[in-house]
Length: 136
Length: 102
Length: 130
Image (tube, rainbow over all chains, first blue to last red):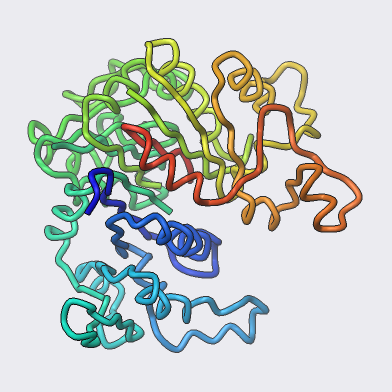
């Protein structure tokens, strides 16, 4: 890695569709991927709702952007940290979330899950390691 | 390495202050700005949550925002330090990163 | 210190653009640098030159324009967010076939890469939003 690689964390705490923050955060992640920084995404509080599977927006006239999360692996964004306590509080389990995979080039392109369920304490540690925190 | 957490929402309207408190590490600072300054007032139902991290997490409140809202500095939770914008800048420089809890 | 600032809410409706401006001013007054301010989400609306706030209130756009003029702060408006919300410069208006543009002096429209670049090149990134 070059000297000026920084750790970027994108913090997602809001639900999708009711506001634009989830969608426009994802747009930053996609553009930002081209800069070869060390990128992680954090989903906590209502942000965990963004990753719930089976989103169908036909009835509200908005674009369903949830499939975009599955493309993140192709952009080498492979660390999606999801907070367990935030899931529990909302009656969700990891099974409610969509499957997001990436291909690990260091492990013979083995398919691995990008979503890492972490505890609140672990999430705090992850946040404390970052150089730049963008909150949406 | 430490973080300056900023909270700009009233704790009676949003869970952001609690979330910041839940994720702040010892040695971090929390600065309440804009409507977030209501969290710094003594005698509210969130005072206890703030008190629980006192000592481990430094608590600050933006002077301009409390004055705007008619909160006297005498009515702040003990241990919460008022700072002006220069102080805000100083905190942002002193800590290694700033994290906004919106 | 080099501070990068993000404004992610629009003028007047949220206090964000005021808080960001006050922070930027204090940083500059205290010997720090503010090379760039990036406007995202509804923050792009700070950059319209067509706002006419009441005379006895602060003019948020003019405050930022003056800051850019006096201190060389690069005020960048995200193109994607701007397109959604109808904030255009002359170039964009022509490109998109619109009959007007509305960007204010001192602001420029550019890509999200400018935000990431700001994160890389500054010492501290501070966000003001909702």
